[in-house]
Each structure stands twice: as C-alpha cells, then as structure tokens.
Length: 287
Image 1 (cartoon, helix red, strand yellow):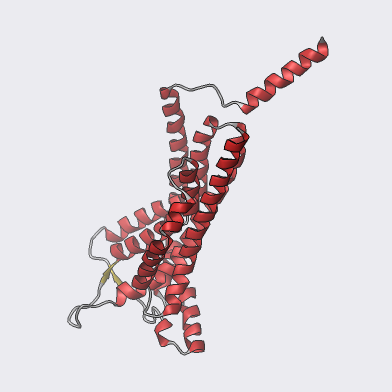
Image 2 (cartoon, one colour):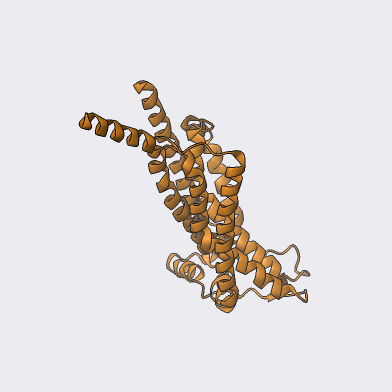
C-alpha cells in the first residue's frame, strides 16, 4: 500500500509540473503585467541616470565618434580603398559640423539620449521581464524550449545595434551629410537631427535583427510558412539591395557589406520557419 501511495504522489507531482499554473483572472494578469512594466521602467531609469552622469563619454566617444575620420569603420574603409585603389570607398573624410539652434536644445538632447541609452543597456532585462510575464501560461516543455529565446533575442538585439552603429550609421552620415541639391545651400546639421538619425538607425538595426525570432513565432501560430518566404525571396532581395544602394556609396563592395547580414537574417528566417513546420508535422503524425 505504501509503495502504491508513493507512486500516486509522484505521478501527481509530475502532472502538476507538466500542467501550467492555475488560471489567473483578468485583473490578476493586469496586476502582474503592471509590476513587470514597473521593474523594466526602473531598470531603464537607473541606466538612464548613469548615462546622464557619464554623458561626456557617451557623446564624445560613442555618439559623435562615427562622424570623425578616425572612427573604426571610416579607417577600415580608407585602408581598403588604398589597398584596392577604390577612392569611392572613403567615407566621412571630413568631420561633420553640428550646431544647436534652441536654447534648451543641448540639454534636451542629453536627456533623451540618456533615456535611449538606458533602454539599450537594460534591453536584456526588459526582454527577461516580458518573458517572465508570459512563461506561466506555458507548459513545462514549452517553457524549456522558449527560455532560450530570451537569450537569443537579447543577443540578436545587441548584434543589430552594433551592426547599425558600425555599418549603417557611418554610411548614412556620409551620404546625408554630404548630399546637396545646390552649391548655394550649405549643410548646417542641427544636433537634434543628428542624434535622431543615429538613434533611429541603431534601434532599427536592433529590431531588424529580431527577424528570425519573429519568423519563429509567426510560423508557430501558422501565419508564416517557408513556402511564402521562398516565394518572395527575390522580391525581398531587391528591397534589401535598394536600401543598401541608398545609404552606401555607389560601389558594389559597400552595398555588399550592408546587404549580406540582412540577407543572412532572411535566410535564417526561412530555415527557422521550415524547422517549425517539420516539428508541427511530426506532432500530427504522432497523433
């Protein structure tokens, strides 16, 4: 009898582990979501305050760095240009001059830049809080598989930010800063415009690198298929090439440097969507 009782208790524990937690009411969900949002906001605020304190380093060594000829990307392309004899590869050869036309312009730039920097640094923790909110609704097996997505999402977001900062930003500054409709018009770039351009490109790069994760979840719920992605592969490549051609100098090498990572992300999305489809078909076969 004792052995049978122990077996029943063990089987009951296994079932409880396999099943999701008890269903919460709508207000309970809102309360849980509120605390996750508060924790995320606090993390962003803490890092934003630190960014404001060390604003000199953030502006001089990070944000303004791409406009100088000594920036890493600008120097590497200059070396490649000398080696290959392609002067068109040289970008940002002259320092971009910035102006401030508002009394509170520089202060507001410092505040908003600190908030954005705080969000970027705190992004892994924000993603973790989002995961903590949705994980109780998953089964144990789903939770095990999806927990790795949190790490992958954080890594991809940070890689996208680095991609935008080291590749897209220098090319964009060179193109937009030197573009002129007439010699009678002189470019005097407002600091607000410069900061907006840099931050939007960097954040967009982080979001763009989440494409494989988006493909995974859309494939999981049946809204995306590998067949669809393959069907519009050529169209997607054309769009990526057009974007690369707009923001880079008129040479194949520069366009390739920008386009290859984006194409790799698209191909990874096809592979992930195919993987999800195969897993789904296997489940159907088991049933």
